[in-house]
Length: 477
Image (cartoon, rainbow, N blue to C red):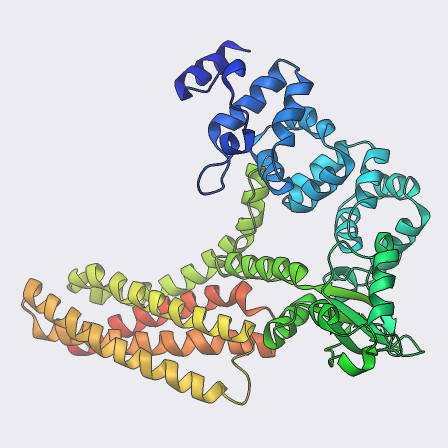
């Protein structure tokens, strides 16, 4: 153990190797299921000593999700010592849980044959995600080392568009003809378990052309009489086209409360299935993208570089610089008025700031409504009028408060009237821009979450300065 780690171990009161309790999982995880710093230091200490047996014991006490979390706390050198201690099945599960940047780094360092074994232990949809992240040379080596059936399934899935149902689906599923009985189906599941997915919820009923005609939930299958034909107990299914965008798939799952759904090709034949665990990941991914896009940034994981973070943020900051300069140019047109009454320079940022906040509120509501399909052409006018009404009420309320505050501090009723009217105008404009800008961008085929905030902020700043200084020129000077 290095002197630095020895000091850290003493400071954190980390138990010595001989004092470690038998239940390593209790030591590793806190009450909130987050990794304890003490456990991470134990892993680092074992790696420093080159104690592979201890590393294997420490890592083996965790679930794959927790091992993936551990990878984020370790440097690249320590990760290279921990990864070889994982068996192929666990390695595959860990890789599927990692952030993209960290996953790519680890996969490039893992031998191709080891990675191939790990992919063979995974569901086909998860394996496709991992292979897609590999560099071309590494991908060719890994695929060459895989079993031909697994390789063919992955190569076939990679032909579909990124973020489509074809990429999202798993090819392993349970299908049966409608004339089979419940007993035949259960016996087939038991005898062919190695060829079926590890977890599935429905038995898809197919016709002679291999097209889905219904589905039987496993729970209903187990409760039915063995002699009953599947055709008598099957339910209608919601089919997913193989080329459908994953965001559309997530919407369908949410709307119809699906647990799984069959995926069909252009001829209507059953080619795979999508399960709810895949959709949870899609919803989380899409939500994170929208939240980050509203702020004009990209995901900065624990291993993101300084240059990478700066490069992802600079473009929108550059656009903001142009829009901010344009908004500020309004001030230049009122230099004479500001020179006569310096108080204007003190108050005008308040008008712009309140308008910006109000615009952001309306924008967040509109973007969420568009993403959840709650806002469309049929109710757009009603939503716009609703936001305008809310903006007008907010403007009147804040105008009264600010007018009173300005009168108390400056004893000038005309100045109070000026800022009050400016706030009413700017908050009305903010509400209008906050809901109309994302609608227009959506109609133009643009993602409203990405660029709406820039335009809304520009409009509220521009109108805030223009309304306040313009009214000041009319009322005060």
